[in-house]
Image (tube, rainbow, N blue to C red):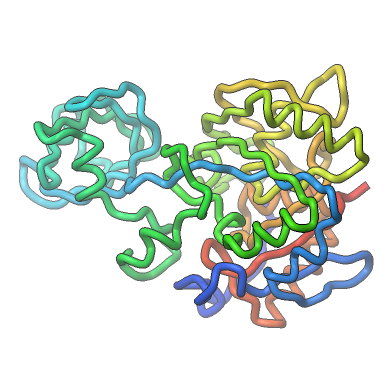
Length: 348
């Protein structure tokens, strides 16, 4: 599709700099048939049918932003993307580097008790990186690593972000960005779902370049999706099979869950998944045939992004364009810490 169809003007003042005081207190635009309704996230419990299956992404955000001093002088910054080799005192990573052109192979950067050595440099600012520390790499990352807030949040991260830029059910560390739809879910809201018989399942997809790299091509077909690691185990496959048996919808909390579910689809049984793990490069855009996902909770996404393409594929391009026009007029808050949209059923 033409990328320009995903474009819109997003005023800077509508980009949420901080989350709402309560996780479930954000506004919720409900994409109902032929209209938009305005609710609160905490009212989602009234909108999700009894017996539905709520699928969450349990990835945990790394303290992935490192800022340090170069051995040759000057400052450097890395955004850790994926751990390639683990070890207590020595680890290999892929990362984004800045200033990329000055961080060639052999360059060393010191961050606290961490020593980062650039091993190789690729296109687009990506590097292979060795992290070493006599105190333990993971322990030192927890001490000196910063919360990787997206660049459109125009402030430094602080202590509050350590909690709020993380879902309450995060457990498998590995993401360079939060699965932001899940940031809206509170303990109280999850308890209310459980009281109504809504079931839960958890997949893991570590958010990386595949999710947040901007689209620069004029045609989305020409956009390169970077791989992101995901895992879906037998318990999820069984939970989806149970939901199908009781004719209840599978609800994805966020676009990363959609990508995991649709990457694991069972070709022999539409609507079902196979337990699997690996790398997904799935690019979902209008024309995609969904198999597993029935309903979607999602945030408002950046213009010209693969996330907006996915939502447009799910709900219909014109329907989503109208919903975004409404959200802009009603002064909804956009992007990672912003408000949410509920799409109760995908476009037919």
